[in-house]
Amino acid sequence: MPWGTSSTATRYNGYITSNYITTGGSIYDSTDSFDSTYATSGTAGGTVFYNVLTNVTNATVGFAMGFTSVGSYTSARRGFAPDQVSAIRTDFDQVKKDWKRKRAEVKARRLFHKIVGTIRYKRFRELGYHEIVGATGRRYRLAPGQWVKVMTEDDKIEHLLCAHLEFGIPWFDTMIVQHLMITSSKETEKQFLKLANVHDVAGPYPIPELQVA
Amino acid sequence: MNQSTCDLIELNHSGDVKLSWDPENPEDVKNAKDHFDRLRGQGHIFYKLTATKKKGEKTDEFPEKESEVVCEFDPKAAEVLSHKALSGG
Image 1: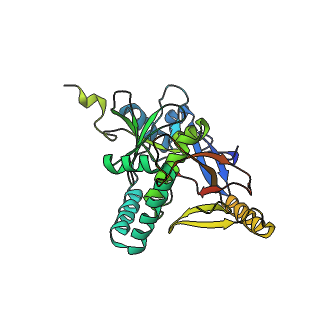
Image 2 (image 1 turned 90 degrees about the vertical axis):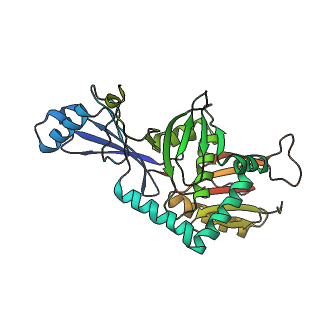
Image 3 (image 1 turned 45 degrees about the horizontal axis):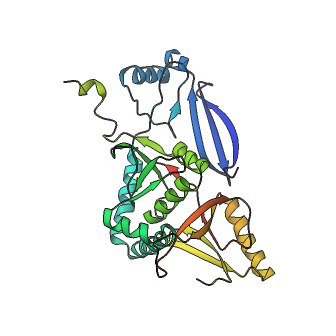
């Protein structure tokens, strides 16, 4: 398997266990699972945790990659961290103003054309998005600089996925990698789904309790 | 595209950088393999790309490419693309 070596670490006095996959010395993937007794441990952090989990249905907390539940709590998702918003804004400014970056984007777009083929590239130019069917049969829409849209059978957006290359690398390169990961094999598609952060179409708000008339 | 050379395309901040080698030239192959191993040590992931001609595609158009993940260097692979890992955002 090309993804690297697995290792485990515990944090917060053993309440949270992180499973890492490292490759080339970098963390490629991590999954946090937590002991639900942390929420009732009486510690300051545990109390905050308890309040978040009992008052917000789809909790958005600042863990690295989201976490799975132990006990009765459901999976939570990560929201947009302020430093990441700032990094994206800086990156988009570069795309608009820096001629080297503009040249890189043009180069990346040409490579994208060569990889997806002229027929699909023309379709992308017409529609503004690149639609692909993954190896598992799910349908996705990709667009440069945007979250990946996971589509339902009746053409609605089910949810959004965010996974990208390092900021500063052209967005068309990110699209190439997303295309390759999703279409190459079931294993690579599942790896993509595992590492991508999931976002609601409407964002973390409104919460379901406020959607009742 | 020159049929007698193979390409390793590395995605980076400039868009992409291409390393070409002649599969019949042992020195070329060694340099390419060393580069491949260096990128793999940096955590790069590699896809072997294969052009597939589909019905309806004209000869002056780019064909769509199929891809598969590769872990080892293949000196005869016509086109290999490498990239660093994606991160969730």
